[in-house]
Length: 355
Image 1: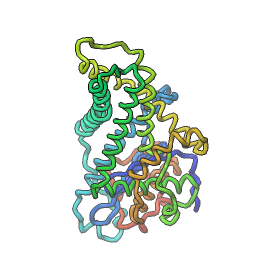
Image 2: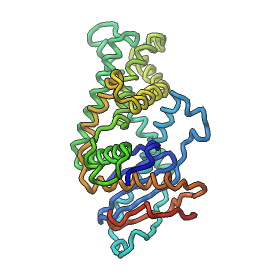
Image 3: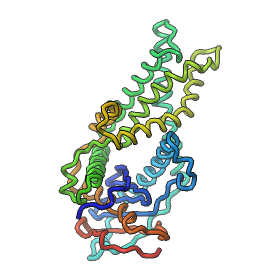
Image 4: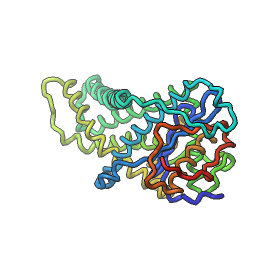
């Protein structure tokens, strides 16, 4: 039957041999193990802005969304990596494997948040620090006064930043494992498009959809890069020289200033991408989302049918909680659902059980 829950906003992320989907009240992950069985994990999810209402305000919610997506993404990647190492068990081959529950490995929180902190610091150093220093070097080499109060400085900084990001994505796309993740990325988009169009969530319907979606995280990152160029052009002319003695020390201090500025920049980018998702035909917004769609030609690939199955399972499981309105149901964090194959899964017939 056609999907009747199209009012819910759903987003996702491709992971190792799987897809994570997030709806307003659910976080669902589906992964295919090396033995071909399908593992599904679902738990109740609640955004921090449900407790702190002011975080829903425009230009604040973008930062919240970014941080929560990073945390959810690392959790999903950790889960999928664990499942990739699970050896085939004879129990998994038995009839009725879909009813079997197995404990999930406890997550090491210290490693999780340590990985997030390191990744953020490394990304900031590479994609903010290096372009800024290259723009500073350009002024030194040309014997010109190209400073942060100059439009030219920020154009150089932005072009270098964009080139580095595109080159990085293109290089990792050549790795076989990353190619498969990008195929799952395409499967995620196709599944969400099927849902948004109100079509039945089947492989046949998903196969017809495009892999390019304006609300993709890739588009968000590209918008962040573009918005940062404009914001830095406006703000830096008003920032005085922080250290007169050495141009390079001053440049490093200026890079440090860019870190807190990423919060409002993320907020602006989020509002633009949110608006473009609701009004994709608006002429000016088309130009805002085009670079992100172009980039998705690298970060998404055509998926196989078995990849579409995984994306659809994750999406259906997330919508399952929305459909049944599981108020008062605690998520079973230590239990996984294991299915022998795609045909054995029917969430529509499942009913909520008290944890």
